[in-house]
Image (cartoon, rainbow over all chains, first blue to last red; front, side, top):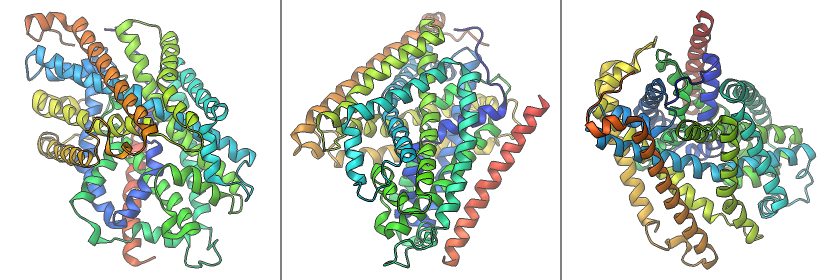
Length: 529
Length: 34
């Protein structure tokens, strides 16, 4: 265990870093589409309910887990979960639960960032394209431009490695001079650019002469007009999923940032601030930029989620509006900042792991993780390069389907179970230590112990059924059966996942054993701080 | 925009903006008192 750990320079810096951690690419390309297609304003009712049922309780649990683990010198999840789990079960069983959580967090931070770094590279590349006016000419096919971009190693690999270099440099500088300094710069700029883009989006008028009813305000109406007929249990689960992923829960990275707090630093106020700033970026900014622009240029059909809207449709729309080159640059910079401040948290998690468990210096650890990300990111970048003109991303999609979504729910469920049922009320007392806003005991008992875990079990069961129906549990999944060129990539992704999970488990168990062997052999809790 | 859409948008915007401002102000105050 390291005796002296870094601390955040200020509360504001911490919150901006934590908000940057939570605000990611999903806020900007997933939420508007999810809301608009699931009942608009009516979607926001289950969305906010899920925020209260799942988001806020789990946010408190993760902040508490991190700060508690940080008191013992840990910044990684395995030992953090062990410390809380040992309060309610034998130390040996707690070590196994801790190792499982450490395994998931390791897999998420290694594998999610293996493709996330590429997407950040795309946003950086498209910022460059916007500045240089690469897609401003009407003769440029923006769909083909994107396919060519990810198929070209010269372009896509250059921006990917550039993004990784900036990330590595920032992490290497340390918590205050690196992560906090970048967040203090990027997050305010992200919000300012966002509000400027809102003004531009709402003043577009009706750019399509043949469709005078396609206006930004009609887009807002489409987003917010409540359609209660669409509200059912599956929409509630979709809202819950959105809340879960948007807040970066179940990844271990909130816990890692919280581990740099002092033992009596306020975590309830900070947790609420993180949720609020994340929602400001998601509901206010993304909702008021993406949908009005997409609707004004493409009507209801113009609103389709994901990569296609961001990298293929929106450039086409930017070039059709006045000042499109500037606003396009702003949009891709917002995406870059959002992605960067989340990826840096995953990067830092792994650096912390090397520092604590292998006693590697931060600079050397940052370089080692840079090399690791190059290795694990290569297959992600190579698939479209080796299948030019197809924009195939089966390897990426397979990792995202398991590690980037499914495992997060599993990890979140274990974390809240450990806090609510193993550490019990001690976790609640810890949560309120040094806080100006106290978590009420009834809230803790109702949500952390009962409602949130039950809800997460429902989410997990429904996700499992959905995945089974989609053929994910088959050796060769249904969706690639008729695409022989993609089968190898999917199988490769599965091998890599199993390999990384195995390393993650053994690493986390080894770390717990190294630090708490006395407790494991005596089966008695004896180390307290 | 239809009235109900305005109500929904105004409600959620107000909630989010006010929570963001309140929590940030409280955190800045904690920084100053340090």
